[in-house]
Image 1 (cartoon, one colour):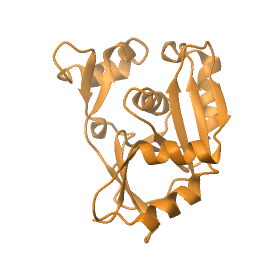
Image 2 (tube, rainbow, N blue to C red):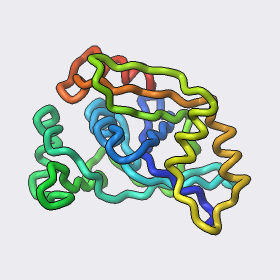
Image 3 (tube, one colour):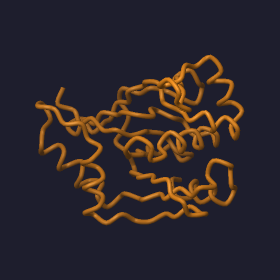
Length: 193
């Protein structure tokens, strides 16, 4: 009650920093999360998190992610996890994946606020592009992924935006990301670590 609810993934990078990955469905949050898990990072959630600005903590909400089955070609451990899964929707290539069944995933009720926010976008370019986000664009992207309800406090929303509007990166994921292009993966790891 009264918490900010955001559509996004949360993980801890190799330095132990909390990184929020915010964006709409299909922007690359789950693909990026699988990549991070493949490189030993700890996933907290893939879809929703709640922010309490008074306590300065966030809580993660674990629910099955919708993983494109084609990722299994590049991550054999993922294929093992999905072997008994059901399709997310009949006739679709996305399957339900219970992240919390994996050792590198933990749910947290009281995690410190993110150290940085990343906005992934899947593009058609050959390489990964990392860009700083203008304050205006950061505000727009954060607001577009918030779930508003009648108990939300507008001053908490403004405080959250004010804190992060200068700590955001746009991560344009190249089309070679899925086939483990080492150059692309290294650039992503550098951007979020």
